Image (cartoon, rainbow over all chains, first blue to last red; front, side):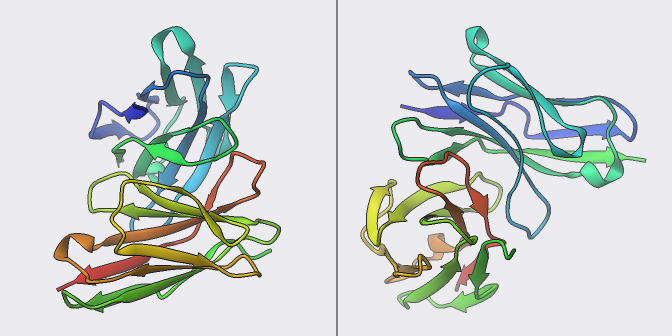
Length: 114
Length: 112
């Protein structure tokens, strides 16, 4: 069965420090991969997506992610974190075959210290 | 361009009652998906509607049902509410051939 694992439930970083959020997936075919961000009481905003091609993808708000097929990973990175990045981050797998059901990880809550 | 909208924002019900949640998709989108997000968890896929039919369904009981209207808007109905149905219900819209979903702000349902 398809699944997404985000190993880190909570991460705390200092403002200006670099960030990496981990995501591993289990899926037999080439997946569509997404990172979403959710601020408290809000819906989900798409940060970036990977469908095919270049394995390093750029997103909004200075985020990037790298797809590594050999490791079944799609880690999210940001070189310098801002206090406004504090939120919950979700990795998701979209299944191929014409239907775009998303399977989400449990999320990583990011706290940013000044 | 309005994004995905959902109503109501918050809802309080008691066990055994029925609830209807509503969603209007982003302009140009014809597919609506519903997700349940329990506190501290990631969203779980409930079902997806396309051309007014349920196209795909997640692991949810028949108490959860839906509808899509000709204007592509959608409703989620939950019958015989349980305490465990308390969650944030998210609607997402997309174009059928495009694997990218846009989410609404959600409806917070509390069952007492």
